[in-house]
Length: 529
Image (cartoon, rainbow, N blue to C red; front, top):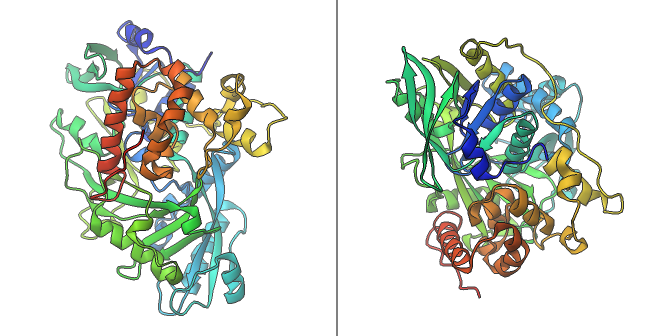
């Protein structure tokens, strides 16, 4: 079936048999976009990821496909325009995966930015999108839209539209599109060294992180799409660092504890940084911080106690009656953003634009935004094309193929969710679905069927692949969803084919991961049968 991942052994056996037009290093949204855009042009494409697909920032973002309203304040009209247009494209091409989200910004005296400045920015925002969606709500309307919202001096609100997604699933959908066009994608395959001949890149030394075997692949061009790790690969060429890794941390609380129909957007009362909270996948997501990350990139990032307090402060400023405390937090996560180092003292003012550069045939693409991955990819391919020896023309061709129809007897919300995640493969991947697996998992928007599809078709190599990226149960449910493991095992065991010992090993590994990086610092998980 086109678009599916080849069996791992079969894919590994083939990667040395040809010279690839392009090898993409990095399986996040940036690398996925490059692979899809290159494959669309008929290039032979190999994408490798040292860990799992979307393991880094692309599964730990704020989950927003937004137009970059904050960049208007900084006068960056170009980035905002590109972001708004790409947001509109994604909403049209990937319904059920990229969805509209209403935002509400409280209007309070002496709070920046003021109403008129914010309203001017939103007018420009709407003009770029070719529609008018924002309005000013009076106090009564604001209280109806967001019960409990009561920051000091509340007198109304500005309401506008942006969009949200499941960031890891967006990566997986783009990778699926790349494979439909002929690309090969492999997780847990690390780039160990660049090969140079005559002063230019000719290939890579790779190592299978699962089996340990080394591979040498030939390539006409190599794209470095490794996010916060990009400088590490460039160092092999003697290049100077360009990145300032910044940590963004988030909290999740059960939706019943903080029910919000709108996304509440605010400036933190302490330092004026943007913070938000909104309903995501059945929980309430709170984010984000923006701090220099000085720890090793080889270790998963973790939230700090100070960040926990900072985010809770923001919520209680807007919803004083909520009296949120750390005890209400069911999960947290932190990611490291690849932000270009422009020498700014304030991390929040560092540019979010991307850079692309060609160094001896290594094309590095880093920085940028989730929303603009398609445009970023085309910038990288423009530099790679001379090395490939094939023409390159920018195009507005769709990223996503239309979704296949599903059983009309299934409810509309189920069909739209599955079509958003699996696109043109939805009908074939879900053909054998049992009725009981079409039910939602309590406390989330996830269907049991999604676990079964992931186990059978989506290159799950570890339990965290299944519960943190193929599905998001590990951050949506308390204690990393450990209480559900018996049922998850019954559902997924036939396709994962793990022995009892392997299941035990994976459970121990996953539990340690959740404790260290997805629960509040110092939290001890209960024991489960």
